[in-house]
Length: 99
Image (cartoon, rainbow, N blue to C red; front, side):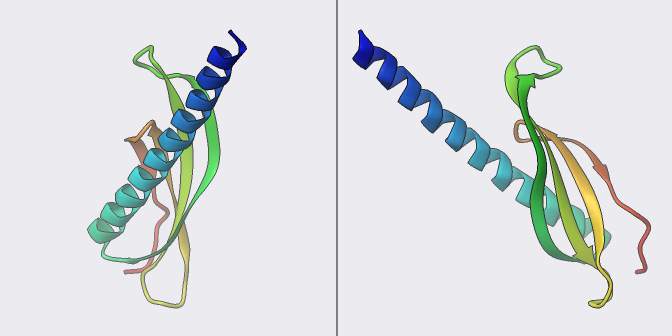
């Protein structure tokens, strides 16, 4: 019986790691798409908040907030925010910047 719980625990840890990677890769894709739409250079993407909980759909998942840095002229850097539920983008906040 103890070995069954061990397999369940190990499987859960592997699944959560896989889900975190999937969310991070989706955030990177969304940040690249956003910087292409703004016609700016993407510099970095970093996760600032991550919570496990129930999403608006009622299913369990990960709510995340990512900050992405971009530059419009190569000298100044600006930060935008991606708010995500699992790998789906919910909203984007981009500050005013020089084009």
